[in-house]
Figure 1 (cartoon, rainbow, N blue to C red):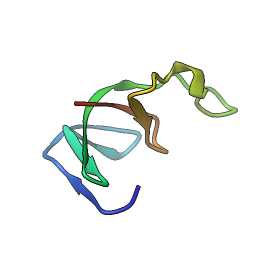
Figure 2: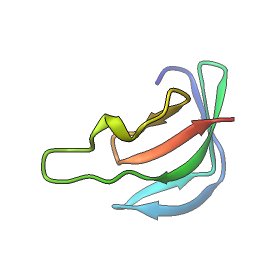
Figure 3: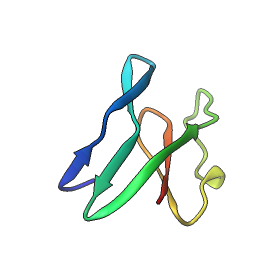
Length: 63
């Protein structure tokens, strides 16, 4: 993500903060859920078109 703004934190997951909102390249995303992951990673099939996943397995949906 380039040029991002982070909203207030609403918790943490795997030692990383969960931000309520993220603005990335002028698009706002709202925290939705934690991805289902295994030893091989987090399958991208669990994402809809209007969602993004951070490396920590947090899924945000476009608002």
